[in-house]
Length: 119
Length: 288
Image 1 (cartoon, rainbow over the protein chains, first blue to last red):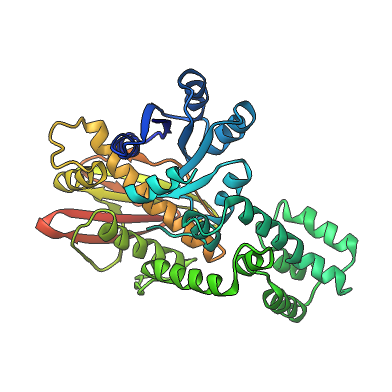
Image 2: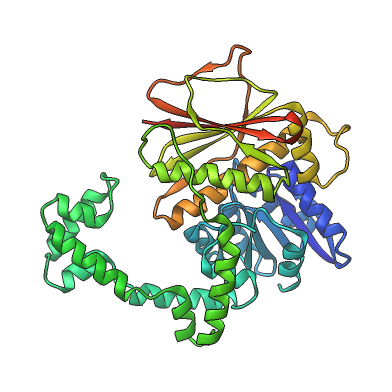
């Protein structure tokens, strides 16, 4: 089972993602961080292989956390999950900072799992 | 299922890798000459003038071309000619991917067709505003995307009411808001009745019943709907050349008598009639 950390300030999005991940059969959710700072801490304690992270969060946002994670942990694969995915420069910035892909909201289970399996 | 730009669509579909996309963007950066550089290369302005314009741009929130005209370095005709040249020589991301060998012309055409079909759902059908405001097309598009997301995300039947200028914001069971900044300044506000809040929560959480969910989770589902709508509005605006930043959504509590429209703002109200008599209203508080 591939370990996934979910990072989103929204309880409902975290619930959606956790459900999709836990019902996939090949991924398991190791936790839920509510902002970028928590994500960096939980990346250390939970050692996930994949992080699904929101871009727009109060406190440390997703792009700032991505910048830190890409320096601290070269192995973890980060996928950004955001309603801003369609804003061209935000998407490009995330990819340039090392995100493997960007999942746009609203998302569906098939798209999320397809992107995670292609990592 | 969301507003996207073509490069993102290709990566999401697995048609090209993210590193190929970065290579293509790099090629675009090399080939697509900025307006100031083009004017310089054509001898229309001097390096000193462009430097002065760059410095002035720090405190002027307008495009470089308009600024060069405003500062008297270019005539309006010269700017128009430069913009046409820039448009005609622009290397689009699809062509850049062909040039670096990540796509063939046939594959590009097929993906473009698929992309157009995917994005056709976000093409505006036209909404009439009761007053003339700056950036009318942005507010019409905002209402349009809201309607489309009510169908696509919430799977609810609805009928849009006539948009009107509001002098006050009437309270409802719950209200959630998000602020826009950048080229436009406004607050997007959505109000929902209790039954509608539950309908939204059921869909967002994929649960048959939300009766035992805490109020915090129910409110969060409405805020997430606002987040999805506003994020897609910002994406569509960026395609229209308008910068719109969004902040995380918040919930609002209004007094039972409602809230007077704030000074210096035009408030547009879009009533939305949902099946089963539930009530939703969208308010746009646009800074004048």
